[in-house]
Image 1: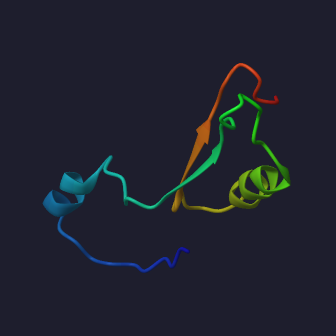
Image 2 (image 1 turned 90 degrees about the horizontal axis):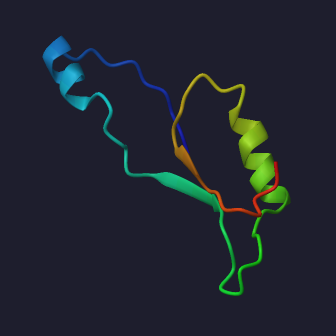
Length: 70
């Protein structure tokens, strides 16, 4: 999902893009309509696989609730 390409952009253009989402977010977790936790093995695989990467794209979003596992 990610390819890193060095690009030369002006400092003004780079500053204008700071803090903006790339609009591709992987959302994990949350609850079923019955209120059950949806955390599963894939949740942990995604978290662990992105930890060593020197990038934050795609962005990961985690839906946390009172019963979210530690």
